[in-house]
Image (cartoon, rainbow over all chains, first blue to last red; front, side, top):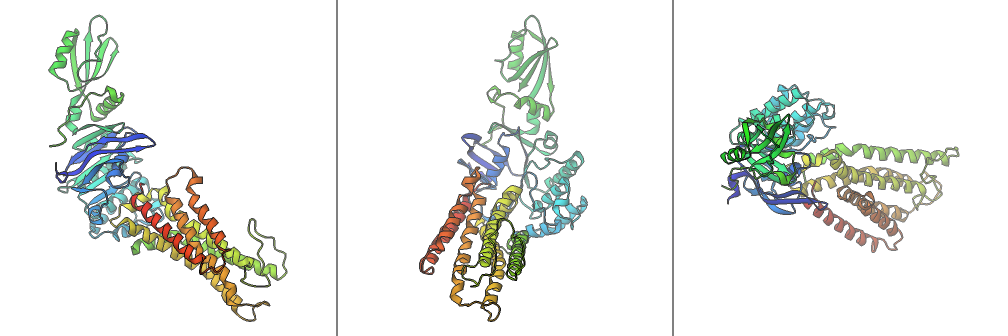
Length: 310
Length: 224
């Protein structure tokens, strides 16, 4: 296995806090040029994973590579190829926008000032105003401009749209989409807002209690998780043992199942349980995510992932 | 070292230096008016300042100047380390493409520069005043400056300890402040050493070397 084939590659990455495994044996392989959405509920381990990837937190065990280089002891040259926007866009509130840009620029060897001007002008961010006087959305744009100016190969964003209103979120994502059009650039973003991920990510990873339980193309995940509505005669059948069934409930005399990977095997099982009029509905990403993660980890069936290690 | 970062640190912390200078000016003014016979109430919690008959030799005004200097060192150390944590700006700063060691060196250089300038100005002016014949009715010899100088020289240990406190991950503030308390006690004890340049100074150098080693070690592996 050559980690340099991937923009991000982790090998059994593990981290605990106070005896609790926050990230548990994480094997992640994100292809170059992809837009990867890292999803998970609060405390699933997304932020800790991102912090380990950027060298902000040391893993207890395991290794991680960004752009083919190990993150342990990242060199300045390596770090310059990777942009990182932390949660809440931390910048110095007492600096003006112009000062903040100049401060960030002083560290870089490459800097595309016209790109910075373009992003800030497009959203009419006043450059003479202090960052503390800007709205969350404007601060997010400044943060994005600063991250993009060195023209990084890899962009890692930790919940970048957190706290932004709908319009600002849309503006931010449109800026992101423009960035995506730059060839060969890889973007990894974590988010709670599934619509954002659905809009821009071509692959998703879902973390549940520190473990990566899904890692596949977004469309594949969306089409694999289905809501199955069926009718039955007599007592409600026990579907808990059926292959791919995450959740089963009876509502208004109908059986409602959440299924991962609707297969012929499952259809045959339905016949044997006297379940009829089976209607399998596709879910949007948000519903699919909610249905997939709302149960306990034990209830999750092995997801039909694409092979991670090619 | 990174010039941009040093400049940023100086801009971020200049107000602490300014406050220290203001406090020292206040002490000087207060000492002057009380010596002149005006009945001015002392500020709360501060040693009663009065120009004693023998200047510089452990007098109260220089003690107050040193107190301000020590408080400045502690405030600077904490602001430069813990405030980055509070604001989450470590994430921004630590992802800049320079070695972690350079970030720490730049921060320490800026902090020590600001401390040295702002704490030495009041003392230097006071010493100059005390050494000028005809300004006060008491003898003056340069050796009288020694106790003040020894204390002042040991204050950087307090700055480094405060910086370390800001980096420590302990959740209980008692444990977190341990380096500051220990070094504060050491600074105090060192004033009683005889032949300071032969005993206190080497001890101070060793302690500072250990503190720097610990800081660079902490900083190189610290999680944020």
